[in-house]
Length: 274
Image (tube, rainbow, N blue to C red; front, side, top):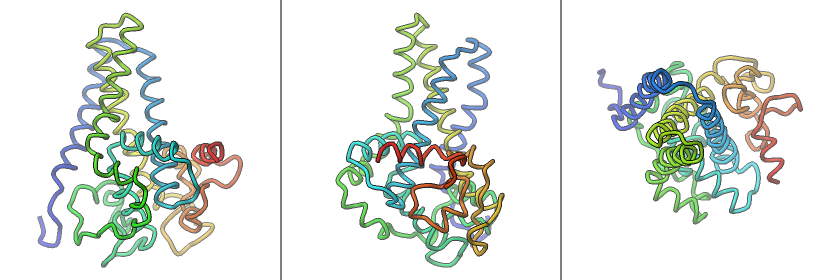
């Protein structure tokens, strides 16, 4: 390892590797042994969209950008379900994202944590695999620290990630087993794999593609001076976040896709909530 590279973040690296391996090995093994159950696919999709939208609506548009006002119930629900993605706390996520917007495509200090100019893999997930160096503080989220729930979520984030991200899907699996007569171990394991680990990997890469593919593929109709790009195709893989050039130009807008036909489920959720 070269001297100018910060040390590997082993905790994050091993977690991302383990969840990936469990998904690509465990899911095919489970289906080959126990067969395909439609409920497992439904469980995966419901959890993927519930937690993925909690990131884009909650962590991203509500907390990081303050693009709309929300009742406490909305803040709590999005904060809890976003924790199930294992993408850290509101404060950490929003702080890193605000640095990304303020210093987009820049090196030096402060810097863009997921700078696409350091390579596609770095922007996608490579930045997570090494310790942040030099480390930036969370002074840019002092406004969020005034919210008691945000502080509570930050203090208990590890317990929330495990309980919401793994234990809840296992519980759903057990309940489905009790109601359907499916063997409980099989039902619990299905919940762990489909609603838990595989779903976490899927949502992770949905978020990662926002930082990589949204700065790599598409047009720049609003600001050609940034790497952020608009792509309707990418929007399908990023919960509607594919209109990224617009977003970087107008970060305070709760919409990413401003046209009625743009795929942006987050804007419709926010519209309904308001």
